[in-house]
Picture (cartoon, one colour):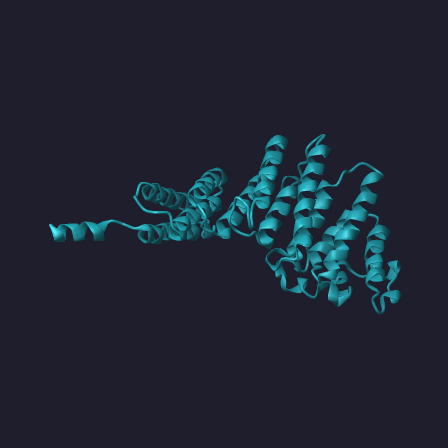
Length: 322
């Protein structure tokens, strides 16, 4: 009798057993996707979800380990592009979490999956619904929020990137100016909350500024002559903060140059920045001199302090940007 009871105790899996098995399938899915084997990645994800279903049926109290099982499922579903099921698991995790702190990585993984989904969407209503939903989650994170975890810089960057994702391809919507303006408002609000928080966990970085310039380029209204003056004022404000924070990259310079086809306007934007920062030697730089610099060398000819922190972001400083 006692031996049998002991045997039953030992053989029953606990949350750690489930976590090890779930992580093993999460790793299998990740490796398959890295090798371009999508079907094996999807199969591993299904095995993981089966284990999560078994975990739900166990008489176990919810612990941080249980939440880690849910987090692994969210990350894996997001990685295979199944954002809807990932969202369902997140909502369930939220219901059972109580006062336990959530892990940020699965939420950021879901945000990233939504960005990828938005990039191929051409349904304005769905786009706005998704953007509003992402922004809503972001605003409910942090102390006193529904989501008991602080957002980080990546969380905000994903939301800003999502705002312009549907407009980055060659296809453009017809008569969608109102939608784009609303998307730009969400991007702007996210950026403002970052820049005003003075919180080291989500201060704007080089990616933030690169995303904001792309958001303006894709979303600001294109009705002449309103668009250029609005874009100019908006870019000037963001560029001022970008240079102050030392986060200027080649990618941002490239985006700005493409945004203002009238080269004089682009040159004025940079010259006004030099004047604003009272740079030594900036009086030697005029429009003609600035515009004579080859595009790929321009970034390195600008004041070094503008890019003092942005230089470490290699992906944003490649030789030539698309």
